[in-house]
Length: 393
Image (cartoon, rainbow, N blue to C red):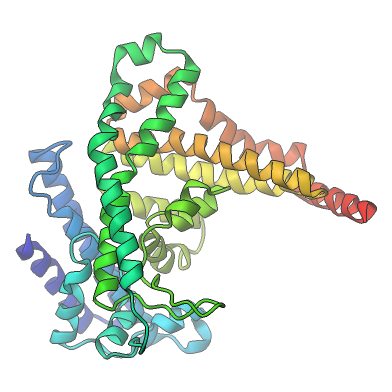
């Protein structure tokens, strides 16, 4: 495992030193993804569907580190501050790290195995003690995260086995289960399996916080925040009202990485390119690409529907709350509908389930993108909402 991390990171470090900063960031991204992809393909060949001696997890984190550092170097060495966004300016790196600085960043123990990602400048501030604050202890934060992580681990071994995702392939489920029972099982099976991610991510965060890493200032009421490097906000994710909030609160450090190197820099079709990079980073199981393609479609549909429909519910507080309830429920259903292939992994099995639903989710999403704006104009609905609000006043 360590040898692969050393080879990948060393190759990328040589590129950072000897290739023009104008091109270096893209070459590092491609080189690190190619190395990671080879490992993904080897795992598919030797242990399809399994996780035995899996090096791809740490390599995925390493890919994020080397690519984010390369883009930060590109910004710091080639762009003026006026051409950078506030986030890019804050993360810009003005010189190539020394060998010690570089490998210390790649192999720091706190987030080596499962993240979360920390950007280079934030790591350097931690090492140099710039984020150390007197009379600020992470003990309670660490204890809370460890306890929740342990609860999720127990939930994983006791409850999750009763809702196996493989049951979706069972002929009994496909042929003899009513559609509403199928939908309920989709929601349950995809919900409980999230406990394994919660367990790993929260424990990783706890390790970082226990070492003093992750301090992010204070709240308005004076409490310390330890969310500079965070992967998930469980409550906000489970109660999210739309797809945007769902994405913002799930695997947050990866979302920041995707936004930093893909979404904010893509000249067009930002959502599609970002989902494509995410799928490639995850690997080559067919289920990944079915999910991320569906995710791109549903993200665009959610934006379109929100622009057209939301203003109609803003004239009264009761209607606004009703809209929130409706969007919370529909987000849970849509999430289960698009993520089960990511867990199931199989192409034919995933399509078999979608066929039983007559691809209704995809058809509704496409309707929301291409037809709804012509039926309910976003501009007209906004004007109608404004007039109702003025009238009610």
